[in-house]
Amino acid sequence: MKRTSAGHWLCSVFLLSASFGHVVAQAVDTVPQRVSFVGDIWCPYNCDPGDTQQGALVDLLKEVLARRGIALEYRVLPWTRALQEVSEGRIDGIIGAGVADGKHAALTEKAWLQAELAVLAHRDSQFQWQGLASLTGKSVVVIANYEYASPLPAWLAANPDAVHQLSGDNAFRQAVMLVQHKRQDIFFSSYPALRRHVAASQTPNDFLVIRTGLKTPIFMGVTRAKPYSAELKQILDRGFAAISSNGKAAELIARYEL
Image 1 (spheres, rainbow, N blue to C red):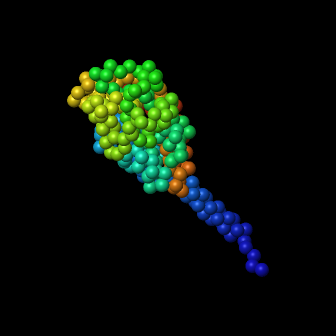
Image 2: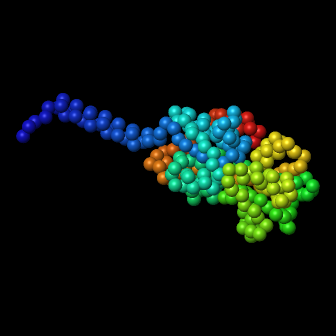
Image 3: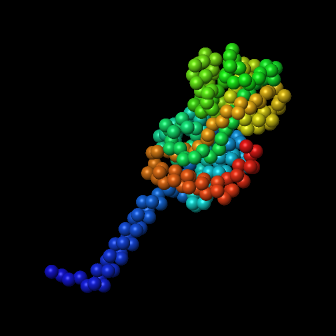
């Protein structure tokens, strides 16, 4: 039997350990240096990728990823298609997900923002928000597959004949136009998004933007279909906790008057 010297044996163990450690490191560090996230335009939460300010959620996500040396590829798609792309693993994650979107993506442990629901109505209607009872006899337009603050979803489900759902690239703008031309009575969206859009319109005095006080938690979502999905979600959870504790998250959010 061939004997192995102690020195040779120690050298072999060292090389094996180093090799094993390299394999473990590779297994853990599987997130690519560039990841893709998608959302629909919901400014000031996430805006057009070509804008100077791309939105509070996009800025938060960029900051979290950059701390790990990861670049963000941010794309815009209609919301229904965005959910499908993430669910099927063609995109790494989705920006601005609600609780119900957990069936399409793994949501971050904590909400990154809260979105307050508001009503858009034509000024001539003299509409006043007094809870769901104020919707009696009104036609309501919403964006398909959006998550709205409770208890509105139950009302929408119970009154399908009064609800008009929009989807596609310009769903938000189309909804505003339907209210402006009095083809629909009410459009529900977040208060900051409606306020921003109306202020930038050519006829801001045509509209009433009324806060409801109802809020929806907003998360980041990560596809479950990639080998590095769990690691990417962990990066988001830990990174957001870090920038929340050191004040960076508040600084980024403050740029958008949310």
